[in-house]
Length: 461
Ligand code: UD1
Ligand code: CA
Image 1 (tube, helix red, strand yellow):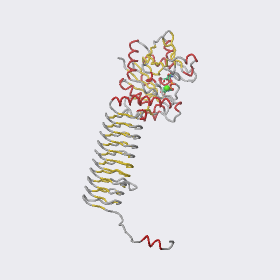
Image 2 (spheres, protein in one colour):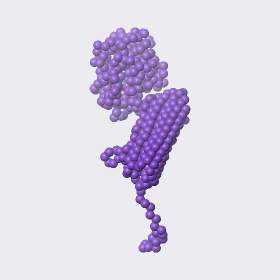
Image 3 (tube, protein in one colour):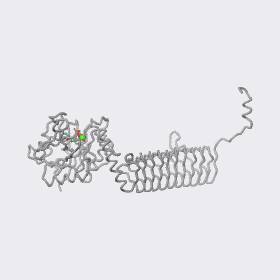
Image 4 (cartoon, rainbow, N blue to C red):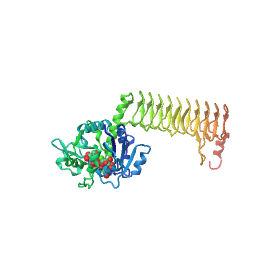
């Protein structure tokens, strides 16, 4: 097996996206386009991977920090796809083998297709192998012009004659090259076309003139090669990804009421017998256990949900953990680092932040719990607020097992409520409450008998 080098073209402006951001950073199915291309290439274990970056190159490399074995080849200015590939030359000097050339805007390509291309390339002794597809609507792609079955040249949409535009076989923009003749041949390409760019697609012609054999492989599933040039195509590819992911999950035992409106990211896991209602978004590194029910309009990001958890409508959960049997919502907000214990309840209009709510504890109505450690079997009454911020620093509230916090209580942190203690409703608690004590911290009630009658008889009556 020859040495493999992956080159990915990702320098283009993506003019048709009408965007201030680089095209390859646009997200589809929860990940930037470029991420899918890198994941497709990864299993090939290439000895080098070069990403050609240009338009907002710093943003692209910043989005990919932490990826090892990735080299960035700057292309400035961006003079076309042939010019893009040339920028990879300094990274490949003295090397040999094959170049797998990928486009940063073709996210559905499978590793299997690349493996098949490599096999065809090696078996037929080609110098270049193009991936092609036959499309019902080839508009926008380069067309493959053949004579006697062999590739003669590729013509871009803009440069094609009406007759050529009717050819349904297109160039997918994915190639295998022998490394050795690639760069010398690229240098023979001129920018003689509608866009004044150096087209990589002029290479087959150069190869033909130089007697270098060009091979093609037609992709089995044409969806794989869909390129993203516009927002509409981004949506189209997103829908294909969603459908594929949802079918996979349903096959693994997940119920989806309406897959078309259910969004489960590529790195999310969902256990069997979990029911997902419409408009559920599961994103990032989220893991959902089995036997859960997630009702409509819930968004969960980078969180772990245990088994048999019920999440009622309209909840947002981020970077948090919910243990088995808990009930969340409706309208609950778990902000980062929240940890809801087994069988605990978090009800409507309750917000948690950096808070541990222990096993079987309940905070069911209109409550803010921030920077709090709450034990097991605690009842947090309606309208309770942890006053965790004094204007400069954040402070912790500790509520021990079995405590009862009356409604409309303010817990002014730092403060500790002892085990099984009671807080009278409407209290502003500034001092620690010992275990088993009752704390009442509110104005005393005064009843003035007959006051209303006297008022009515007085001035202004
Ligand atoms: C290209 C092919 C076309 C093919 C289609 C498949 C050329 C000339 N045309 O057209 O035959 O059918 O892909 O999707 O190659 N890029 C750079 N630097 C540049 C220009 C582009 O890195 O100077 C990158 C882009 O970021 C993109 C890729 O190359 O990732 C393809 O460029 P794009 O402009 O999208 O080419 P298409 O018009 O789609
Ligand atoms: Ca493209």
